[in-house]
Length: 98
Image (cartoon, rainbow, N blue to C red; front, side, top):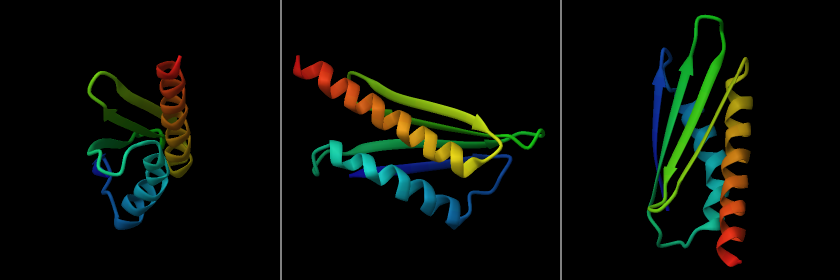
């Protein structure tokens, strides 16, 4: 089960943004045991140039999964960061098998 800590800098984290982040990051739960406790820290930042930066950090004991993306579209950045985290998980799991 993942606990989410979602923080916004220069923007208010609305319920819609929170729900979108949680719904996207829930798809990585399938890679972990149901009883495993995870803490995902999500930082959302908006700059003056109207760009958005999304950072996700998930500590897993011996390794830390981390991804970030900067673009004009915050929702698109959330999608890209989720894909990056998922790739890191798959890469790490195949490394451990060999």
